[in-house]
Length: 247
Image (cartoon, rainbow, N blue to C red; front, side):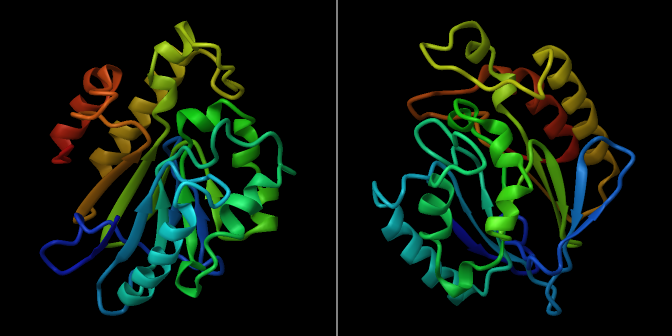
């Protein structure tokens, strides 16, 4: 999905900038880490958004990557957002898993896509070694890659709040349907979700950005095959509405 931003429609056009040289991590009193990104000199912001993509070039991934490169050049994008399920079917096996390069580095080769990629985890990523995707080692392989559980990108004009939605979904813990999930770093899912909600609520309330965008893997509302994510409807949606964020 691509979008271009103008003065009145800026937050709905999912578009951002960050070169691997300009990335700056700054501290915040909340738990969510914050990355500052300068806006373009003309005051606009552009980025591409994709999810469910890591298939080693198969299932039309290479074709989509080609079109992303063309659109990215046309819109002069600032960065790319990945909404999770970055590597199919079961995430990465380790930091040395060749699937990282086969599904990412060797696929998104267009010049316009050599920008920062901000990524969160999806449920398929948790079926592998989730910690591997969060590792700094992958940034040594490809400096575009930045994946955390939850974090904030402050692009002056807009703030983008990335939320780790997989631990919200109770069925992944109660009935894994034969899958093994990597819950290292989560601890008690109830406490993890409660703390994340608290931190997100605080960050949203303190944000003075003109546009606030929340990114996560699971849909809150959907008429698709999976339908609504009931845990997000009950826990996440109530803190979005008071902060004028639509779903």
